Length: 431
Image (cartoon, rainbow, N blue to C red):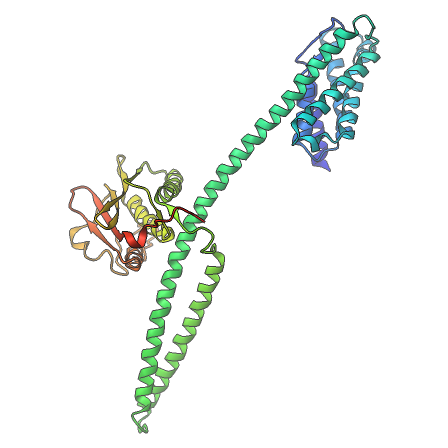
């Protein structure tokens, strides 16, 4: 209720003050202002406020402002100023009642009906004001009517145009926000899908470990009667280990199922252009660099665009490699270059940076699990060293290969080579 009252008062004050932009078409006290345009627009904008009550508040606000200006600025007697501007109060009350009865807000989607309704309400209310001012005569009726009608049509059209412009701008901003959120969600989904891939792989490893443990138990069991406590305990431990591993596998399976439910269905959209992948990752990292206050130039170069159904895996790999490059860059002229091109029957992704580089003795270790050069001296936190290992496994899943190329001095390059028959989709339809 308080918010509505504030909105109604806001409409009244805005209309009263913008109403001071006016002209006198007949050389009398009757004026045509832009206040009506603002009044009608705000009634559309604050779509939940009552029209008639707001019209009354607006009319009183207009009366107070105009009387105040006449009394304090023009030295007009208070009673005379009040009588002079009461017809303007009646104009807004009449205008509000008419547009409320015609439900003009519902006509917004029908421009012609909308303009006709507002024009008719404006003309009728102007005549109410003119009659109260006793300024209608048969001699000048045609002149009065044509002037009022022209002003009413112009004001009604401006209301429609102004609201459409504001609404279109709002939709444009909303669309941009949705696109940003969509790209963030897409990248998040890519990360989730890659994690699900590794969880499934871990489940296979756990299954193998459980099988080995159970085979040890069976081997011990077939050795015959146990004469010593140690072998019996060993056999019991082996069986318990098999049971524990099986429970871990079930927990992993529950996690995988829960994560897959959170992700979009695979049949929602089948393919994605590489250009779209680059744009999505580029937008995310542009905002990320602003947040961490790093001046790094990230560029993308695409020799030939194509669709791929493996876009989640590609996004996950590129995101990790670019993230590593960004973290390795410290100089003011730092750059990260991402390229995609074809070599024979392979699609090659190249990620280059001029960061701190990787030592020659570390080149053979970068894809090993647990190996890392990332250490935060402030927090003492060390990276897990699994990022490049994940990238290697995802690449091998697509029957490709990834390797470090340090041939050029002052530049680090990771090359990702994937077979075209796995990566490229020939179909043109993207469902």
